[in-house]
Length: 107
Image (cartoon, rainbow, N blue to C red; front, top):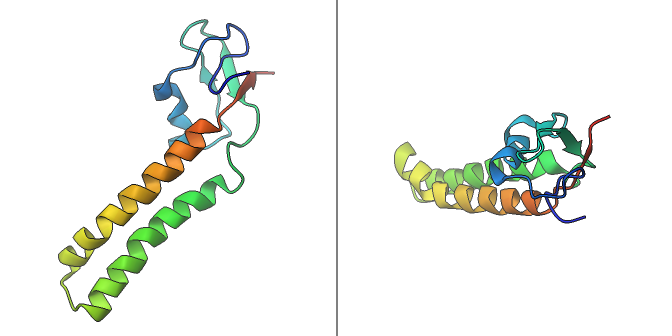
């Protein structure tokens, strides 16, 4: 079975429908956009799925504190300094999660 493949019609489920798991969690089901049958994740995409997004929070918090304490910047400058770190970590975590999504039929 390929990544993001429907177990019924063997077509690839759209990325838009798979992004739902990043926002709502892995306990929800989705519908195949080709055959309209409900499918669930076969297993959690990555061990520690929720922890990867906690690292996203730490990636904005730590550089912001370093900027505030050591460089004596304002709050907005520190936020802008740490924003690229946050975007990179969230993008990598999302990409790795979407690569490991496999579906099974809803029981």
